[in-house]
Length: 71
Length: 223
Image (cartoon, rainbow over all chains, first blue to last red; front, side, top):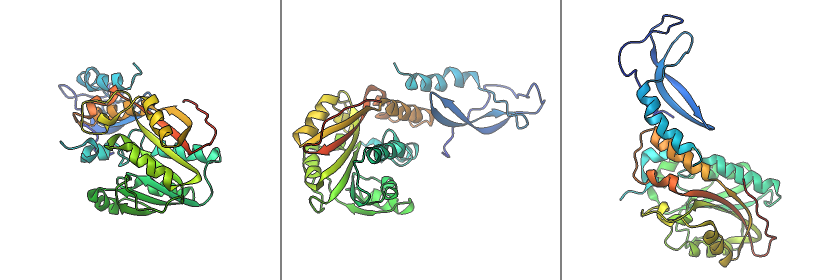
């Protein structure tokens, strides 16, 4: 899907603690309960470690998880 | 008010299938019918409310000649850019311009809930089917939501089945596919399509029925 939402860090510039590389906004597939979602997230271009901004984790991601969970 | 399926963002998010479960659920239903020896190797199939016609190519892969019916000229135009194998007619599924008793398969995928008189479409489905013909139906299950769309046409499972049986379509198999509705609602939320009608999706479930014409033995299952 080409409409992947873009979530930048809430503040500041971030480096990968392991590789010391600046994180880049890269397309990442996110999986939850068998469903896949594309998103652009800050990611280390070298090792692939991905940073999930707090606002995303506590906002849209939580909202989607709740929708997917069998209530 | 624009209907959910008319929104281009909804079309993109649903993979142009315009319904919960998408093409994967259609493929599952067709494979189920094949494994249960409910479909012949050749014959005609009608996809009622075919939308952009994405199911037609899938029907073609199981050896059937697919004919898609939809009233929308917009979808007919859009379907030219999508892969499809089958004849597409701009026609009313409640007055299908098709030969009676010639179809081994008829699909209604999230279509009956959109119709003012779904019974009329089911009446014609019964007329179009061969004596051993199969009707694959998937639709919204639950209490109708306050929307002039498919959500307003949701019915309880027992009410759907009463409607099928009153039109001489016998339920051979049922599966609860409500997870497909939750997945679609989650994708609408994730991709930022804040569609008012989409917000009501988690309030309903989704069912898949395989129905036979007339007097085939009734057996029911669940996922």
